[in-house]
Image (cartoon, rainbow, N blue to C red; front, side, top):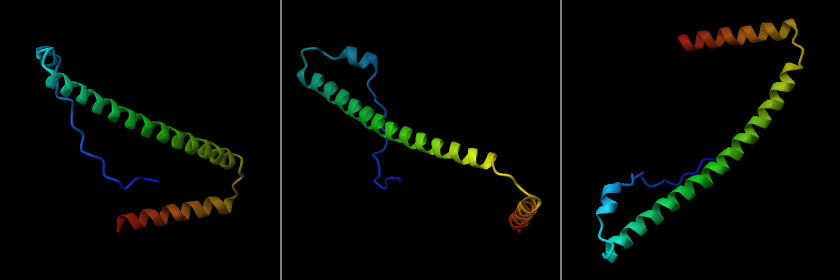
Amino acid sequence: MRSTARRPAFKPWTRSAEEVAAFDPADETARKALEDEATKRDEAADAYNARLAALREQVARFDTGRQAWVERCTKKNFDEMDEAAIKKERAQAARASKK
């Protein structure tokens, strides 16, 4: 099920290596700002990884179900009536899409 909660807009991490190197190590506020940015970045990565793990589990369940469905379908014998019904449905769908 899809979450309806709105995620905050992605903000790229704007500190370049040169900017980080330019900070004065004695400047406590700058050091704290960098640590805060790193913490936020790590939290965002952890949240993404948690969502990714859940998504991978969903995909695995879907794939397992799909494989079972494909197996059932490949073992099913079709007769001429099934083939005629399939062709009729396809023709109706084609006519409906042209309208």
